[in-house]
Image (tube, rainbow, N blue to C red; front, side, top):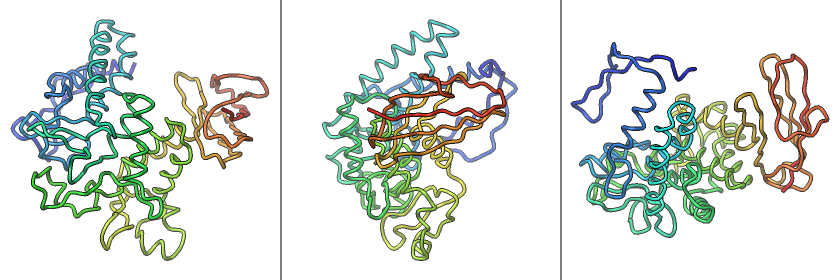
Length: 376
């Protein structure tokens, strides 16, 4: 019913591509559902030569602010993101207007085809400039791989299993530094000497923030992608890289990291004298995404419509672990046994001694025991 709530529009400033101001609240209102439809239709309304959404002055990485200012550059990541949105929103449309669902299904199929046409044999490129040249490909001198599009090729469901494995293997090979504890967003970093100016990203020193830093949003998405491939070792390994407690185990660690041990940093510097130092803390949305990834992707706890399903993905050395989940005034204790040291897979689930495949949550104010045996 939240989709039927009326919400006001914001009065836009159409004169500038980038604005910093408090927008005025319009007197015009529409339902949340209608807002979502308008946003999706806006994204689908105009594409570039490769059939992908326009980059304009930036997508998730707003510092790539010059890639598409001419109105022709395209974002491969925005295409993957839109694909995921369409995939998740089509079932909602089917509950309301079948025609809209059919339109979006056709758009999703076309988008998936166009995204996969960009595959360069090694990984997915990041974007296309206004002049049609590619960014994030092995042919580039700077930023010849970007981790964001590799992870989202898996999260979006666009990549085939073979391509997904190859893309994430490239992330492991070129972007993850397990020894020093980095998950670089891209490499090599941009420098001010680049012949084409990708945007204000070049004002960041190499290895800082989006310019090749260990950016936490990107790293959490990498962990999610690894988990979707059933790779619990690398999924949890990436989350450990971000864990501020593990970054501050000794006095030497504290002097290097310089961030609080109880809050995730937005990024960690990867080059120069500041390598290993935390960037901004307390403000990053990746902290919430980190928590969600641990619960849903690692522990495998997913709740939809009052139904709890379990699909854990953990390191093979996790032989036993427990979760206490409070549902309203009722406690569900979930005990996992992993006798054969597998990374993913369920052999059996028992709810209060009764074999089940899923758990219907009830608020009976009692304590429930769920025993999970992992097996391939």
